[in-house]
Length: 167
Length: 266
Image (cartoon, rainbow over all chains, first blue to last red; front, side, top):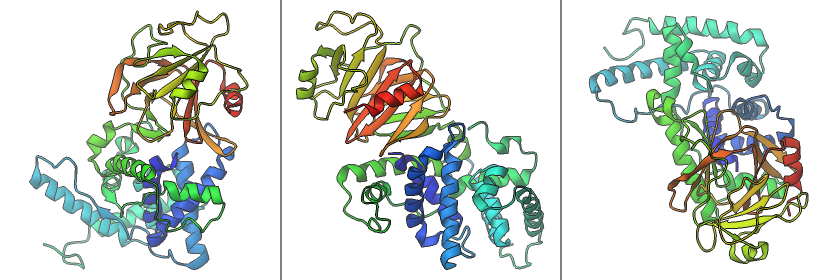
């Protein structure tokens, strides 16, 4: 079945977009809908973003129906260690710390900023796919994305000690 | 997928964000295969929730698929870039946009291990899975079984002109239609290397995949060993799993005809 290959990326997408502990149900529901909608799948389209769009729609439905998803984007996200282990442990420690700081900064942004960054960079959807997945007008993805990057840069340039631990 | 977008980005922050995405992980997904299948079969949206008594084959399938897909999420960007997209469907691995095995020059045909000609009745007796015959094409001209007892693959071959004379020796002439059938389990039986998409198609209640270009295919034995001498070029093919049997229809007719043939399987 199709399901086994795509379920982990679909689960990841649902979790990153804020499905929380409902991620499993969201993915199952999305797969059932995708299977039933296969006749509408355009052969010239790519399958993965089409499926992720259904997953994202289901994740957003959680929010609309029960407000269970509000503010949960990226909450389940954690960082994994590099595989295979680096032969440059000091350099890797520096890079790992940078990733932690970057993720913390992203999670400190407004919800919509996190959503657009998650779609574009973490799920690697195109601008058009992101607009469809999030249900936004086409132009607003670009503008929201550039404002999000501006805010993110400002956060990362905060001098250490202003609410950021470490030294 | 073409090269990653981060390769084209000139903004270091964007490149960092793409890379961060490769390191992002979430709590692992439980096996969803059985739950989705159960929901589709019963039509009840809630009944399959929290289902725990999954059959062994499905758990194993999910475990293998999860291990492989988890690997795609966690490896370093350099390693990940080299790993092809892999789609596993009913015993066929479809590798996309990755490295292909070398295909011998004159190779529309290469025998499967232990391949021999039998009658359809004998094949039905020997196989431990149901053999489906397309009524749209009628009875096959030649039937072969391959790889062990009970045979792991049964093939139905159709020839437009006169069929080669039947006998115990392996068939060498290219059939016009080749239908390989095997148990639709998770351990791979064929491995295909496809440059473009494998197109999913709904055939009634069944999910099928259509690959419209010639592509390398080789046989994978029951120990998971790639049988390189079976590497050849497959014509366009349609893959469908019906009731535990995977059917691979290979012919030069187009998608619509392939779908008709698949619909007539019984």
